[in-house]
Length: 182
Image 1 (spheres, rainbow, N blue to C red):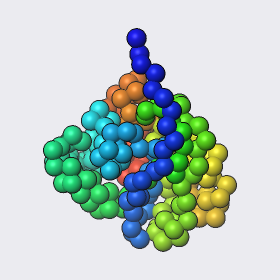
Image 2 (cartoon, one colour; image 1 turned 45 degrees about the vertical axis):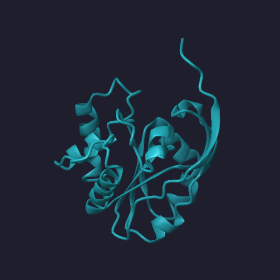
Image 3 (tube, rainbow, N blue to C red; image 1 turned 30 degrees about the vertical axis):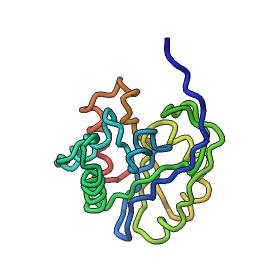
C-alpha cells in the first residue's frame, strides 16, 4: 500500500543561480523535498539533472548529489552553471504540492523574473518537464516572452519518475542547451 502524502503549502527558498553573462535559463517547477533540504536544485540522489547537464558539455562533476560535503557539491554545481552561462531557477514561487509530485501542484504563483531578464543576456528558456513548461506558458509567457524577446522550449523531465527516458535520450534532448538555436 502506498502512503498518501498530504499537500503542503511551499514557498520557494532557494535563490536563482545567474549572473550578467547568463545566456540560457533552465526552469523546473518547485524544488523537491530533498532539494529543499539540501538548499539547492535537483539534489535528489536519483534525479539525473546533474548527470545530464555536465554530459552535454563533455564534463563530469566530482561530487555526487548525496555527497557528505554538501557545500562543495553546491559550489561545484554553481560554478559549472556560471562557467557555461546558464541560469537556473524554478517557475513557481509558491504552491500547494504533495511531496515532489508535479501532478499535485495547485495554486501556483510564479517567480518574478524581471531582474534576471533585465540584467543578463538570457534569450533562451528551457523548462524541465511538461508541468514546468505548462506553468511557464500559463503564468509567465505573456509577461516576459515578447518583452524580452525570449524563445522557450520544453525538455523532458530528469526525474526518476520519467523512467521512459534513458540517460542517453535525456543527454541527446538537452544538447540544445549547449547551442540554443531554436
